[in-house]
Amino acid sequence: MQFGLMLRSQYPKEDNLKDCFSNILEQVVKAEKLGFSSITKGSHYSTFPFNSFQQIPFLARIAAEVPTMRLNAGIVLLPLHKPLDIAEQIATLDVITNGKIILGAGLGYRDVEFKAFGTSKKDRVKRLEENLIAIKRLWTEEKVSMVASHFTLEEASCTPSPLQDPHPPIWIGANSDAGIKRAAKFGDSYYINPHNRIETTKRQLELYKEELVKLNKPFPEELPMRREVFVAENFDKAFSLCRPYLETKYGSYHNWGQDNAMPEGDNDLSLDFEELLEDRFIIGGPNEVAEKILELFFLGVNHLIVSIEWPGMPQGLVLDTMDLLATEVFPLVRNRI
Image (cartoon, rainbow, N blue to C red; front, side, top):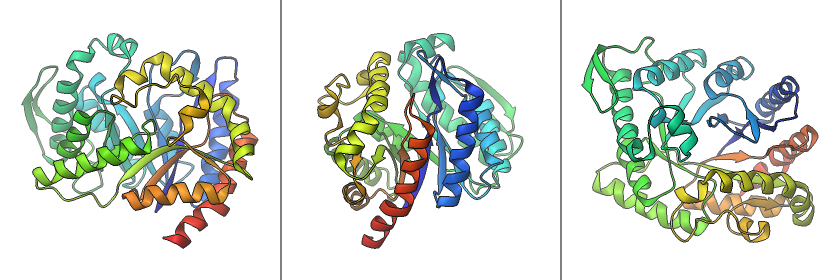
């Protein structure tokens, strides 16, 4: 089981961003020392009411601090972009990291982002699929010619080429059942989202397996999942410490319309916090958190990316959580495995 660290890097507008970035550098250096396997950075634009650092320059800077760790651009909102640009950006990061970059790709769901990039929700599936086809070709062919709905490649080449053979792994983030099928078809792995209840994830994993069989593709060797995780001495303390920050973040998800991208029956992020966390977040004492992580492992998850920081959370609380996870929770999990 690999454990990764998710860095949202979203902060209240009044925070000093220079100080925030210093905190990030402290977190990633500590993560490498504690034995975390990867660093993940998500991507959103126009993140009001939060400030947020942008994904690609962020990862390039972080690479200098953690030379042994994998870096995950997870996820790139691929329908907003052109494939040659993303292919070269990620290939450059692959060289910078000595072959340790991961491309996470997803549809996106926010109108403010689609409008700002001159596209719309109705075109996002086609653009995602076309971009994925083009990026793979650019990474594996010397010259590519391809006409699509929003770009034309005429003997285009990706310079530089990525180091990984045949290319960096492509993880497809998905919420809907249709998205799960796309992940099977276009991705190297299904990147399981942090929002769905575990029961929803179990059902969708079966759908994913069925689709792989139809496509005559093997189940991936690496199955990643992102989850909201917080650990303290016991559940009550963990709940009280993380609630103000995690509740604020999921309130913003609801306001942004994340609910609308989730599967029917599991698409209400406006629930009371206690009801929202049930079967969704991993919160508790070390033993309780370890048991919940083991449940995911026995589902097939072998790269768990933990989100442990939310807007406004003090740096000391973040570092304490990292320590507890690495020194108490992860050993419990690995001993049971």
